[in-house]
Length: 118
Image (spheres, rainbow, N blue to C red):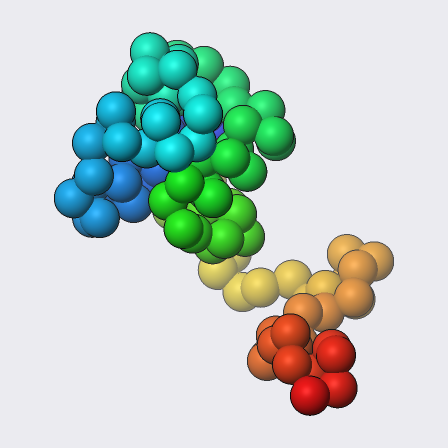
């Protein structure tokens, strides 16, 4: 069974909205997205463009990076569960970023004040 990214994204957006006690109608109005379309995104029936996703995150008052981090965490769990069901050998040891050819993420993310010299 393949996990679809749009399903995970929809679940995360719905949970965030519900935690805030907000309705689809309220968020769709704030995001300037039709109620039906937002509902389809939350149910994983539609792929959200980056612009639409940014607008929804803005309406929820949540950084896009946080939403993507939550989706990434859910995806990692789903992959581990799928591998366990298939009997695959899965390593839980992280691959060093350098081995992947990318810069490692710092332990502390710089704050805006750090970047502007305040």
